Length: 244
Ligand code: ADP
Ligand code: MG
Image (tube, rainbow, N blue to C red; front, side, top):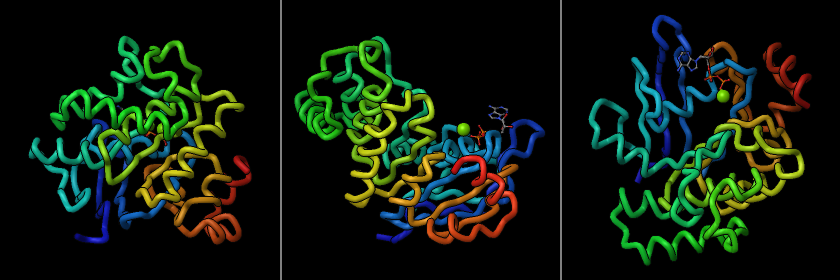
């Protein structure tokens, strides 16, 4: 199997006439951890939403685990299985228990029998340290617990890649660490990760590469030591001055 998890070349994305992503070129190797940062409105969410086809790009190439994201619906299902997504606002199903949140997609999409899906779900809920919350509803949990459920839910599909869109931005400060700890654990186990986050401590700790985006473009990318130690782009420096 190829070493490339995600291949993006000359990719353009528009919202109507608004050119939101401009000539994106990005290769992510299997097992690589990428952190994407940049000002609000720079296209970070749009980029990772394009990677699992929550948004469509208009031209250029996106391949995920060797499968092209094109109009072939079959491919789109495959991509969603390969790439788990964690959102800023958790996006759990409020009317379903934590356990049912975790078993829904494996049962529906992968046709996993309920008993097996529940066993897998409990394993991941243990891993994110909330097996005791399995029978509760999302609204009964703290934000940090909900986000850990969202991570467990994504892992239940056994994805090759995990995409995170500002997973700690909606959390109270005291809950950020419990979510970052789970993400660090995943990174250490070799998961391929693309994380939009402004948690620069996390970036320093786990990222192989940090990417800075502004105005729909990748302006700079470098390993963390270089990115933080000697940012080349003036806008990167200005941005880091604000978040560090
Ligand atoms: P970021 O995640 O970096 O804050 P986004 O990808 O959310 O940036 O948004 C990039 C730009 O695209 C912003 O100007 C935003 O207003 C615009 N945008 C985002 N989603 C849509 C949409 N569904 N329709 C039109 N414009 C959008
Ligand atoms: Mg965003």
